[in-house]
Image (cartoon, rainbow, N blue to C red; front, side, top):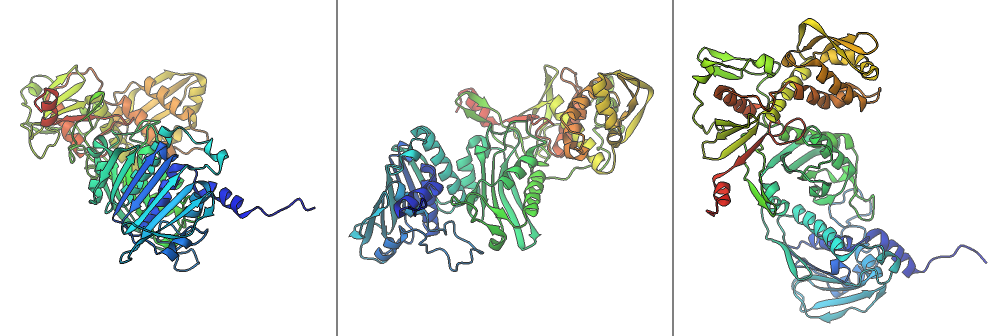
Length: 596
């Protein structure tokens, strides 16, 4: 007797169902996508017991006749493919597996009525057993009810999480789908509790409503396009300032041709774009919409249809990274976000901004005005040569001007924080070290991109004692460091001789700088080129060349710092991703004092 046998159709269907319907969230996704493909303008989703006990999706889409209803629960029956080439797929669904898979693993009832029909029709599927289609009452559109998910496949059911966890996954899926179709009204209920209800609205309104007040306060627009091998690639949407991040990528919504996806190419591109402006272990909040010619995209990678293959993945990755970096490369004054309150008290959102080009190519601009013109030109303490003494004290701080979104400085607190007042009366707080660190970072980076960082020879070369392993790491990168304005050479077994420092860091203590650079190189293997970690290395240098917390600043120095921040790329955060500036609007102050 042969050891090989054909599995029964019901067993085959249950195995296939496990690939398509992994948990209640997957069932919700498939049913909502069907509703969107049917042209629905209103979709309601209700879950009980995390969707394990009951899941209902109701829409006002095209609906189905009794004959179509009988076909829709059969495997690989679909209305969404005009041909069988699988080349230009423009609908969310196309495999014809969702309803049969749900019916194979649960108790499914579908009621549907097309426009103009005298009545609705209903069909039931329980563990793969299909009932006859029967007439019934019902509104135009489709209502799908799923009960006892995985009752027919107990092995899968016992691996589900608790109801609360499953409900959270389902809510996340519905939110992403709602973000993908802002022109469709959505309603979500969990165990009889309304979670969110969104009318048909503009994209920015939908994004702001579903990302939350804290994220909506610091949104930056993204909109770019470029020619690809097979046609035009477009990206649009909104990203959040680096001041607002999450501990996981849960706040990232990536939509390709109206399809929410969890694509590794796109996730990696977002991570790379934010790498230099947020701290390690944090994740950006984005809602990005990518349009790719359908024949340049393969969505038939996995039954869940959340993974893609791009024909020209390099072009897509480049578009995402470039557009996000340009949006993040903004001065601090163009967008004035609100302060937001959470359960734990006030949480201030950092100021974001629109993309802008640096106002300098090689040399940073003059830093502050004086009666005799402009002083300065570098960005580190030594090269800034801050105005000091009687002359500085005689220079009054300027009045708040609409052209200066960070306002006029009025005081320095704890010798660390600058308090300023904007023209609209808002209170602006600036961390002087974090802000100047970003200014230094961008100045070094601009010089580096122009060819090389200008160096300043030391009058007397400095000898820095370091562990031999650190000496070896620095010596191995000596040629690379010359491009960064740092000239050094080995000086015995445990010392480095420093001949020149970057001009913007001329007064920096070289020992601390070299120790930090050695630590940075310790994380880089010998094959890693400096350009791959350039921003991280520059960040180390910038930190050592910035105004320190605890240094008293004159009014003119504070004003100069604010003006430079307004025109410097990525100035909303320091080199380590922390906010440099916080803003407290009139309404926020009134709320704190109980006036609102």
